[in-house]
Image 1 (cartoon, rainbow, N blue to C red):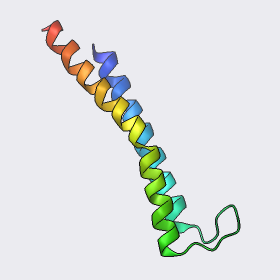
Image 2 (image 1 turned 180 degrees about the horizontal axis):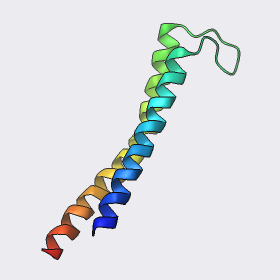
Image 3 (image 1 turned 30 degrees about the horizontal axis):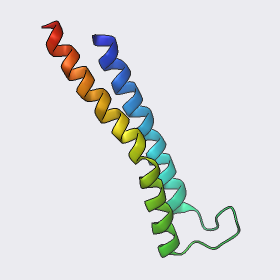
Image 4 (image 1 turned 180 degrees about the vertical axis):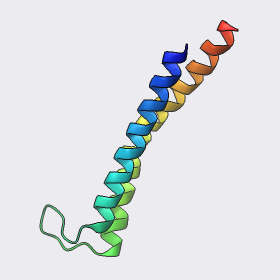
Length: 76
């Protein structure tokens, strides 16, 4: 049971770090890969795309959390 929780926390930390790094990259870059100068509107759009990309891992983490809670109750 404890391994399941440790794995869940490690996975969460990895996703949080990836999201933070992606956010920093989006907000600090001046020019994107296509050579387009990044305005505030384009940075916001890129950030929204990043948020949408991280919704799927968030759903998986919530399901994993629910499974962990149910498995913990069966052990007790």
